[in-house]
Picture 1 (cartoon, helix red, strand yellow):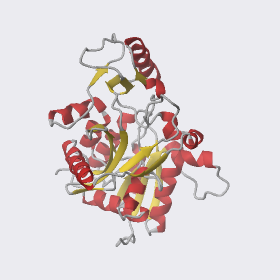
Picture 2 (cartoon, one colour):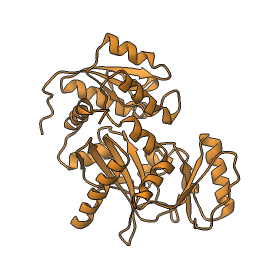
Picture 3 (tube, one colour):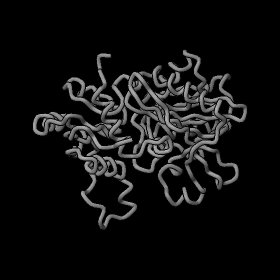
Picture 4 (spheres, one colour):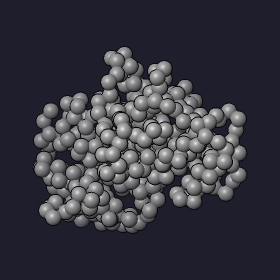
Length: 343
């Protein structure tokens, strides 16, 4: 697949103000590079394939976007924001602002972001449509923790809205009411969000990349494997698992193409496309599943605008399906340019 664009485009890449990458990697340590690897990979690759690219660092001022639109006149804004004003749910309002400005952008639309970011709301929608999701309950802040009888241990406790496994550790899987209360209070205190408590599903961790607007396709199902987990540790992607390279090496973490039967692969592809449409997603997303020994497939989370660093899960699964990194970014841009917000 050719990655060379038909047209040289002006592209503003929207990033957090602390994640504007340097022009060169010379003298940059691996530790420092982790902060803005995605931003660097996207910006440098878009430049390599011929686009005129300007990063735009944002924190709490939408006027920065207005000025850039007026001065630079971007054909498209490549949206890498995961928060605005320090709050993860506000990125959807940035996209709403772009739509009000009639400015094309990459990634998911505001409605899809709203539904997917609220993990409880998305589970309600999918459960209504008979998509298998773990049983769950939300414990609001400053409310007494009373577990309903239908919710059996073990349970997983996490934030209802935080991304990137924030607040998730081995202690997040609880086996009694005392530990449940402790962990709910921890989530309230540490994340300042409501706590989502859901049935812990034992099984394989499967990720599926989905891309498109009205017509969608899936990439190769990907699997998180941790062969050297300590005995008794739950098979979950904790904050340490996701972001601590030394710990990743210790537990032997790899992500790879999932070994699945052709029938199961087709079923996962079909369900993934349906979920993507039910949640009104657009652009691209990663769907996180648990696959049990019995073959049941539970949707854990839908992640619009997932990490697209070169060498990360989404890009790797696309590459396995025959889409190299530069072509993937060009496809994401093309989808942004063709998206109709009124559709």
